[in-house]
Length: 127
Ligand code: AMP
Image 1 (cartoon, rainbow, N blue to C red):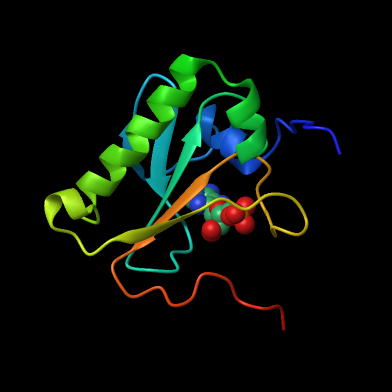
Image 2: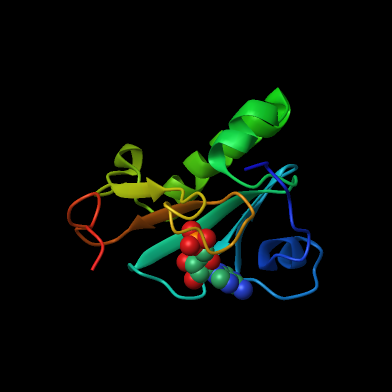
């Protein structure tokens, strides 16, 4: 399937300012905000401002400036939320879902940064 970007997705609307968000960090190319339905004490979404659908789409087609900005922003989110081992945090998990098998709900690339409790095993089997 192609990396077809739907500009009516909810994160596109957040980026256009059409719906509110609880911003954690904003940089030139990246926005981080609180997940509306947190699955852990810390649950922050990190998204590029560009129109990318998935991790591999972003990794293949984003500019170096976008990729560097995005990766540095994730580091800053881990520091700000005190999850980073570098600030004596207890660690975290980063997840990016893609497509049907990845059970991706919002088709704008995002990383989930989760932490604040033991997150259990990496992958659950479907019911
Ligand atoms: P995914 O299944 O990986 O696409 O995850 C989408 C995530 O977006 C879910 O964790 C939702 O809780 C979250 N989400 C959906 N709408 C919003 C919103 N308006 N603001 C913040 N997070 C949202």
